[in-house]
Image (cartoon, rainbow, N blue to C red; front, side):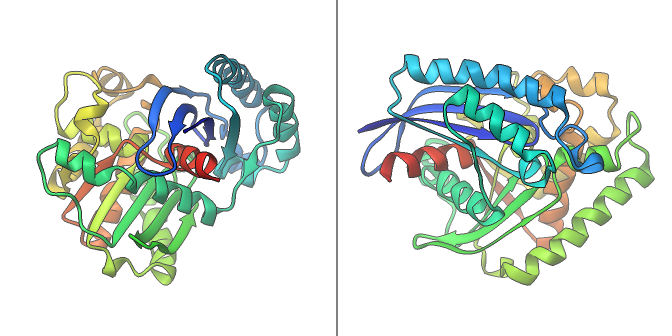
Length: 316
């Protein structure tokens, strides 16, 4: 058993998992944390990470480093994804991480990001479905990880990843690019949807999505849509993990989010404060890809790239 700390730094949030990882089987969580730092603030427009965004990230990362030490983690890996890949001043961010965490972040490619997401998402999905009292999804899986700056599409099964593509559509990027009003105007939503559909053309050029027997969705946009579709009185990871949401429910929740004011979205009992401004775009990505690919339902995973980082780190 190896105790490791995994840090996932995305465009919108930074997350920590400290876990015990056995040679085989599922890992045991000791600590999970998530803080919204909006590292990708303005990066789509400026091409640079804002100094205040780097500082927000540093403050949280210092807390994570202390927690990992206190829990006795023997190794730590921080993975940085879309916002950092895109930034002209990425060296400033890397220097901050090295000073705070004691080692540089791994700014991974879209392909590796996709593989880590697939590993994390599928490792426990059959057990999660069984806990929900439903049949497990059948492979091949199309795993979709909707992030702040990018979305990863990964097709694979028991033998691992068959094909993957990362595209620059994410809930933060599309919100900053298109969804400016409160609530967004119809033409703004239509413009965002055009961007999504154009990106999906790129996906299908590389990923044979028609071979997928099941869609597995992960990350905060998907889990929040699921929580709203399930009408949960509060956010409940156990109720969400392994749940199955029909496309009709995804359409309903998406329409309601895009029609709601910020105040109304914030009042939802399952809504994390850091997702209030960007959840409409995240839901729109999920709804559009399900319609475009003819997916009748999505199986929701609470496990994702963070779990994949821990598993790969713990098993070498």
